[in-house]
Image (cartoon, rainbow, N blue to C red; front, side):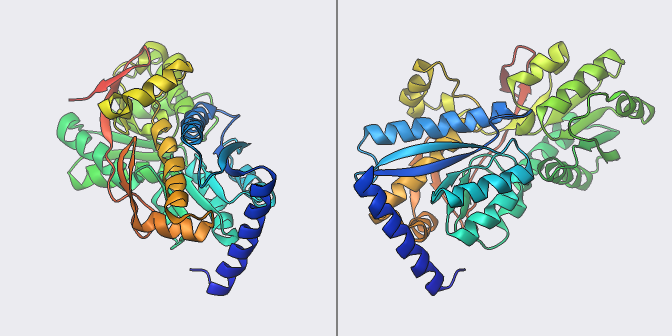
Length: 371
């Protein structure tokens, strides 16, 4: 917790800055931080269109305390060093609210800066539990944790797949290794034999050695923790090299581009994803608004990003204040009705409730509930 002196000084500075901004342009800027470029930019697009739609609709309804919201994009390329540079630029730009970052390895170091500088951050995509284990008061997320997603995946594997010799592979990054570890623990507790647990290097293109090792170990099921570019290649090369086993991955692989990379080899991939919020009848009007723009509302981070903006805006309206500490205090205490359902945060800034669902992925880039 920050001292009252620092809170007061920051609050006075923010209030003065906002007063000047209000007189000059009557707007509240929200930084939208995530990958505009790089191999997972598709996920950044999901976050951006969700947040931008929320900003647009809130402005149509009068804005926040009579002021207009303005989204400002920042590209961290899902790179931790670039994320730190982005966070410092957001500080220097005088922005007090952030939706982002996307990759857990980028969100973690950026969150340290935001907390220290009195900036509210809500990530709609970073699922690694460590991000909110630091006792920060300004850091939140509108998506569930790997400590929830991993067990959902692990229980499904143990109860429905029942492999005899399982491999757990990850990309050695905070998100990928974290969820892979959670899955490994869950399946081993259920008696599944994990004969391989090892990492690959993100960005690699040739996975023939990995496929050969999976074959030598007579693996009959593979869980992969990481993102779609690498898993897409692993799937394709496994099919080409005659490894006929089922694969599973987290929401980081649930992207239509995995089908573009793997082709028919992506058929039957198991993926844990947030629920299909776009199918909720309550979101019919919102889905229509996305579709009118030619945007896909079904991405796993679209609706959580919308909710991230909404909870901040609702808290500003409820408190009649744009001070980050007052807004964060309200966010910790209140409940919000959003496109992802009723949102309530615990003391760490995590959602008190969130579900992950197991889906079958299809080669045409669609998904269906797994049974």
